[in-house]
Length: 145
Image (cartoon, rainbow, N blue to C red; front, side):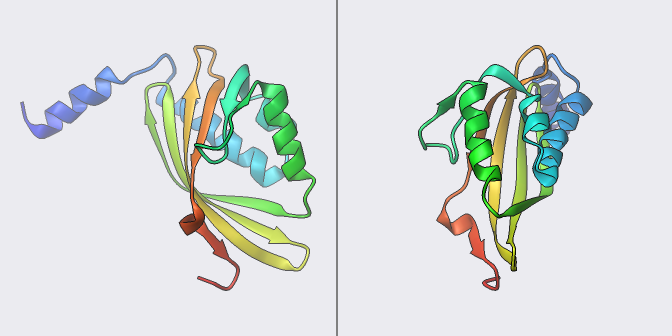
């Protein structure tokens, strides 16, 4: 078997309950909710018992109410968020998104954050775990490009 055939077999073995297109649509809806500042639309994508820590390694928030409080706190800041999605990789019922979150305040751009975020999905297509990976090397202040 060639290496390409081996890769094809590995990809086939990683098929999940949901189609590639369904998983990608949910991940894109997640980013759209950030671009639109719509916490309720974002929450609708998550399972009631979802888990989240930002970044990975920080204390974990368990359950949608705790996650929504975190998002509401972020939404109350005078900052707008504009995600720029570079790539979405899907493997079965899991996804990885590489994106840059551009941040702007009342006076204009304040910086950006490069993130690699993992998504896990349940059988109902809801996000059960969200895991953003970033560290201080991923933070850029406006004008520091």
